[in-house]
Length: 151
Image (tube, rainbow, N blue to C red; front, side, top):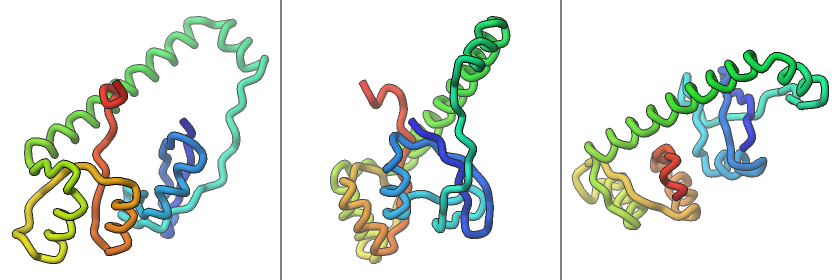
């Protein structure tokens, strides 16, 4: 995982995590990254200072185990809260939308082009389908990934 500091074209600052260094570029090209403040999709990486762990950092962490343990505990709590929030978002979507499975792209197009009554949907789409939907101006948002999705 890699964390980037990001800025939108209105200079709203925020951070986001990505699976690897090229994931940002792929998601940005597909216009799947939005500013949480204004919704802008014109996003760029901000200047960041690297966080490098060296022997001095390790000595400090190990010299005071209670501080290291406290920080680990705090991080675990934040991670649990983030997962719980993602789970609530996922549950809300699943309770209030129709699962169209792998027909997501075609169903989203039908709704967008008013071929069917508008309704909330969720499902699966390939990266190519996602790119095509975005190019067609169809707004989509990925559901948050949960730890159990990787099992």
